[in-house]
Length: 483
Image 1 (tube, rainbow, N blue to C red):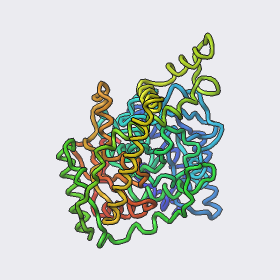
Image 2: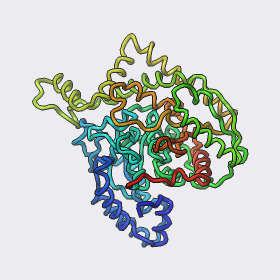
Image 3: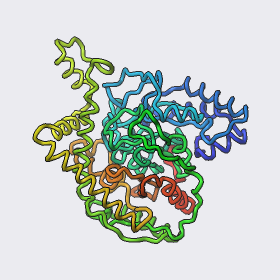
Image 4: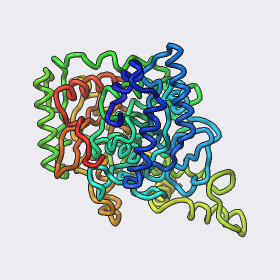
């Protein structure tokens, strides 16, 4: 049963081939057996999962249907879950049990999804490798010596290893798409505001967006359907109708205009990945797509702009973790200042501290105009580049990452080299656009992804292109040895 996709699980449950309770028990046993190799979970919720599975079976027995009714999933451990530890991968929140459900959690629970647990992640979603977690690094099931990508690496590793059919993730600068590429999954970052951020512990509020990780575009459509929608509790949620994301999966790609930016093929891209991207382009041409070269001239400024804006917002968001109201508190503080200093120094890891310091500097008096304001101006230029490009093309295609997964620890002494792995993904976050990564081949036995970007609220178009591509290729069907 563990090899089934979400769509296959939905059909199996509808045809009464197995129950949600049977499936849940099978996957929980599989997690207990295999996850010690991967470290993809922080918290397992066996009792809750079995309770939800029994409830889903009862709803189906009463005639209720639904693609997610009885389907097992996992949640990245920054979605608040009532009564369950929600740690954000940090010592700071190791003892925090959320007093409420995030909107994403409650929406998926209402749809009947069964939550098996909370997945490991880079601390406060800061990282591209899933090595900064307080609970230890997550391993890539394709090669246990390599990273799975981050910050949603726990969700990605669990789905890739067939411990789960799908999981939630969040994407601030590529944290769904990059681990999807490095573990042979399909991952979708929706338009900013499409999925509620209420109850999602913030890293950078203007960039964070929740989305699905699964093996196929069809499964991402199913999970996104349960996650998306306007939320009056979230001031950044957009009141836009939610379409049926599965409705147009089988639409022909005849005449679809695909733009390929020349900037995506500059120095720094592994030539073997470039070759696989060009192979994917040829496959889409066979399906009727028209390829057009385009330019995104301000892409070169994306990384410096992102690494000013994101840390600046992080320094503001993480100021609430002070050892006073909740989270880690130091032992025997001498006074309030000592409480603040030691609680934060003990609770936050090195990467989080690094970004808080950078962000606080960028926002400080005398530097705000020189750094933060300039970064926001660059952000607008990047958005304008995309808007101009989408007058000429329907979607944009390129590599998801410049390199395949690297060895655990290989970039620890040079954080900037890890930041550069986000070069192709962060532009979508700066502009608020939807983006999808889909499997496109292997380099040295490690998966490689191709990224698709679309205009605002065109997630359905991305899913359509990825689904048609997956009907004609088999990369997404391959699974890691031993799992």
